[in-house]
Amino acid sequence: MTTDLDDINRALADATYNPQSRTPASRANQPQETGNSPPHDLDAETSLLGSIFLMPEALEEIEVNPSWFYSKSHELVAQTIVTMHSENHPAIDSVTIADELTKNGKLAEVGGVPFLLEISEAVPNAAHCRYYAGIVKEHYLKRQTIHSLKNIIDAAYRPTSKADEILKQAAERIDRIKSQQTEVVETSFAGVDASELCTWATLEP
Image (cartoon, rainbow, N blue to C red; front, side, top):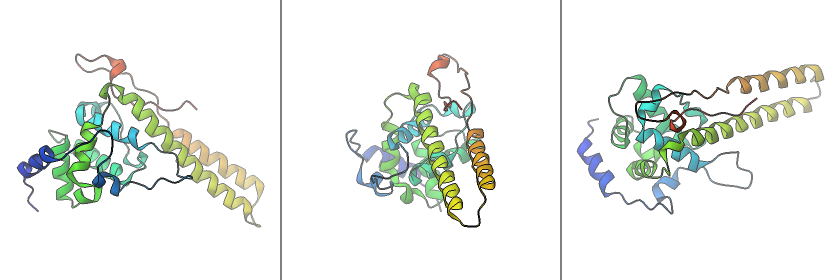
């Protein structure tokens, strides 16, 4: 499939963005909110991705794991960013990401060009990327904990299960989750204060 970057540029320029509300395209593929939804923060996910759009050089210093994102659309965008970065793509922004998603037949799945435009324009302050990352990672770890504990509870209800084995499994699962925590990496780019850079902040054990 041949992708016309000029068409994508025109679509980005023509798309309408309302900072007070998400466009229908961007909401269409987002998880439905319920009273018992797993821990997540879609605004933090959007702001984190948008910060990377604005400061892609931060990818040299931070780890981005697509599985951390609750929204499938955000996960696909993050996966595209990670792949582009690993392939040493010369530019990572809304236009080139739209191009890659189109090549892979995923642009409509994430919500189209308006969704990418929303991400690029919805960042309150890219210098707060550390804060957004901390929120996204924290909710991911909570979801992992909930999933693991549900499995332990299910095992405990089985008549043939043994308490010592269940407790051992519980400890191992929690240890695996804690092992996913990473320390904040202090770094700096030319002309930018380290405290304002996009680095991964996580919960303390």
